[in-house]
Image (tube, rainbow, N blue to C red; front, side, top):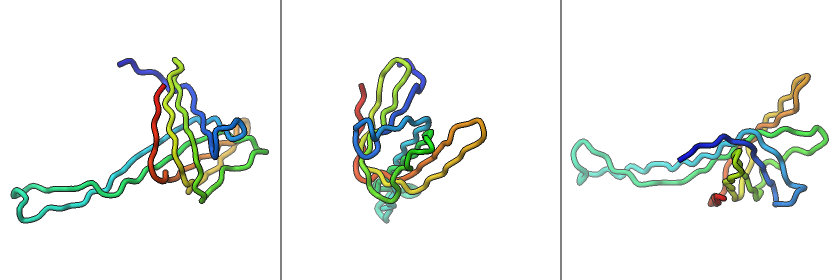
Length: 130
């Protein structure tokens, strides 16, 4: 399978209208499932048995901020669509509801203002590939 570079990211925060669109430069989505150890006396000696536990999904991204634009809403569950596009125009779209928990704003002389957000995805994450 051919690999292609990440060309652009688009974030729709709180809806899919053009007023809610942000260009993003870094994307991280992660998923972690806790382990429940159910090893008992019936388990083969020296082995362990596990069940899958709770599922948590994280989201983080960086975007360039126009200084007159308001920051994204924190501590409020908000619908989102995150679109990753490669140089050939192929897209992966991730959609769900997220709660932003951290924000870090940096700006330097002769550079853009950059905002890094991290949070948690509530419920399911829907993936569509085109």
